[in-house]
Image (cartoon, rainbow, N blue to C red; front, side, top):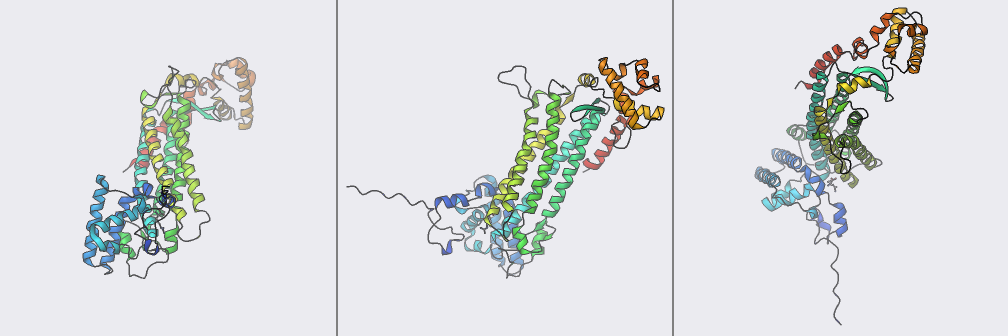
Length: 474
Ligand code: ARG
């Protein structure tokens, strides 16, 4: 009888050379699979190399590393950066993560000296440092995108500062506003989002490196020097906090989610406005898609997708919140799950912001449809009430009541408020004179709202100038 072949053991070939000193065998294949993060955290390669360079330079300056080894490490790291950037570097899952991939390659290149780079350092402070460096750069890039979106909104607002459209509450016609005023509301929201991200950046901008595994190190390191070299405001004060903290990532995700709600609201308005039932704006072929069955369709897919993306952002925020809750100090491997969420949120935001800026530049308001829409919903009723207060000195509450009756009459006659005759008006209240007709058109309504922050075209023009100064100055 032929001898049955034994199935190959499901383990990686050998212990991890980076930490396997007391390990006889390699991990189970499934262990290696769940443990490896390199497919995701290789995005940190540039930050990892930069932080290692600063760390090695400090070790050499402090005499912890010989000048010769320091030089060899610096040169090796520079070459590795080039290899990764030119696509020749081979990342290996067996080496778990970006940190160990780079260190292993350094050993191949410069030999034993590579093993000295990890003196007075742990992957715990290393990854926290890399991640903060990465987020810092990403926040800067997001700020550029948001500024561009504000610029698109301000340009469009300026072009249409006097274009009257219905303003809604409860999605019911409320009062006339200007198109420019509407867009400037989003400029303000995004202004606050930018401020939130700047805040998040400031708090993220402290350096974990030097905390080592969790307790600090017995080597005479100079954390201030490394912090300065890497552009951090200062080294983090507590070594346990330095390796355990992920609130910088949570804060980013929270701010990202809030920003996502703003983008989503604008996306929803665009979706409503382009619907032929409203027809307030047109989007060109560049930002719409057709239907495979209905030849007439122009669907605002980009807007719909931006509207949806906030779900991903909140998902990322929720995931990391749950990952972090209840973790005892200091580092725990749970935290390796942080990067996927943050990377995805950042990518999602970049795409959404760019798509939104594109749509804003593309959208063309439709004056005829807007004018038609203004004819419905007795949209200048508040102006009639205000007139009664001003011209006849009637308390606002009573003026509101009288106006309600005028609306009812117009409803019965199937006409607009300004189509009621003076006699109709006076049948509602004798104190009404022909002067009332001066306030009942949508244009006069917007022109009258000159209060600070109001919708009058003159105010909107001033506001666009102010917004440019506040948000677009470089
Ligand atoms: N890949 C790890 C992470 O992202 C790096 C830190 C690993 N630390 C450790 N003690 N195993 O969290």
